[in-house]
Image 1: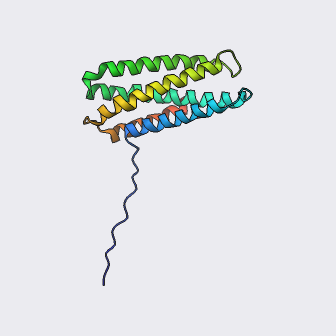
Image 2: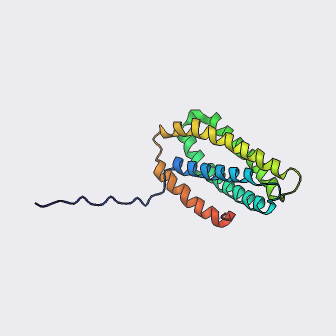
Image 3: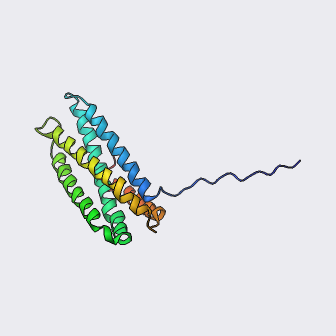
Length: 165
């Protein structure tokens, strides 16, 4: 009896789709904020390192959203300008806190408070994207694979410039 073998499934070499990539970023940063919250008052060195990683991740993430994801989303969802405008304003608020944190050191007055507020800002922003924006984007005809590949490539470029954590 002759058996026929099925060809092994090919491994995909493509990037995750755009939404999966953004959700991965969200999960990574959320985990870092949780780690930060668990650090004690004496862990200044670890707090500083973790804060820098969080800020770097957020700088890269917001830039790929603003350069690639949001413009494509605006085109695909022309009636959702309010949602996208709000997301960009949230980015501006986060960017201001990141700039302030970049100029500070752990132990400085309000350092921990600013990290906490940044975390709350990001948590709110992520919730809105994942519950409101992403489901609407999934229903469009946007090529999320192609968009994800562009975003992944840009992330790699930015990591070299902004500094990879």
